[in-house]
Image (cartoon, rainbow, N blue to C red):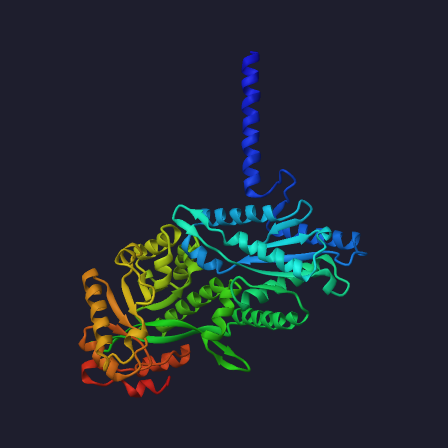
Length: 481
């Protein structure tokens, strides 16, 4: 009896020890007076409260306190390569390294994603040089390789800090916001940068936030909407589909190109919002064309990496197809070659396989830029490759371009996937591609992207002209050029 009790107590003690050890590894408690690293938005509150306390208790000190914020650079690229479990391991290792650099009275938190904040104790008596030295120490710690099963990962971090002595009557939240502003400016400057807060930074950040708010409003009021560019069969000239492309019709600045607003959407994590808008606009347009008697076989939409990693993606697409009373065969999903190259087996592959099984088309966009392997083309259920425009330019005059495209077309034929040439700008390029037996094309030689109204007029006026007739339909093209 007593032996059983002792064994039970011993087992409980071992279990508690292992639980405590795991908790330490995850950074939620500290042993040996190591600082606590809280996680999430609750952690932000802890840092803010610590800064407020330091400022209130030590207002007589010249160096009352300081806040420091750092973020792992290019973390979205890391997320594209590694699965969720490995991402969490990377962040936990970052927390572990940070704890070894901090004093017991410092308070640290992991904020959203790969961002960390620190309330530095007043007893450090940091001046500008001391804060820079601490930031550099953090960067050196982060630069050590992270050992993963796939190999070593090397990361860098952009650091911003704010000294209480440089703010006018600072409070805890204000000090943390100032450090966050400095970190944002540091990350814009270059990877692995360090910056101290200055009041001038607020103007630049406010301008950026203003653009973000403007883009958000444009998504809500549908100022950012789908324009459409036709695709044709190169032999017959028949329209085989349209691609939906995001355009911003600004009330004052008129039409804003995607190169101006897509980086803003990506930076603030709004690509999924844009994708939902494009899907809704594309399917609504397709349903309307059916009602008008305008024959559009299929519509193509671009999918970002974040969308493809969403476990609810397929269900959402099925719901939208049902809402518009369309069959899956009418929708083509375009995936960037770089996404396929870096995508690991998992939710992305599952989503694409399910879409293909439903009957949706899967296009590999910008082919030739990301070095996708034959295995990737098979694994991700690719049905058509879109040859990047860099291979198309001057193909009618450049023999090296012709050799490259010939190789791509041969590979595609062996893999039984179809081909589409992007960015065809002249009738001569169009004729050359037809002679080389590329199957489809899109580009300015046929039509520019246009609004729903204008592309509908184009479709109604367009008459298929075989490419070997050395002509394309100028009469229809005038509507959108």
